[in-house]
Length: 91
Image (cartoon, rainbow, N blue to C red):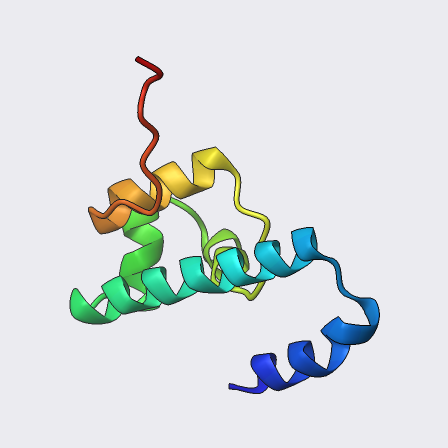
């Protein structure tokens, strides 16, 4: 994937660990979303309907390095019937 080549060249000179982790997490979330869309044979239009969002919003979520909110991730989890993150209560 082109993304890795660009990042690998850029990071040693300009990157920091927080940004590197953000990029990795963002790309991993996109991989999860695309995987589940494919396994459910979900088109982009069906994805929009399942998420109850317009096409512009859905497209922004599927763009690399979108800064997801907890609300957006919750919507995605419910629409795809998956767990992207799991928060356990402190006990």
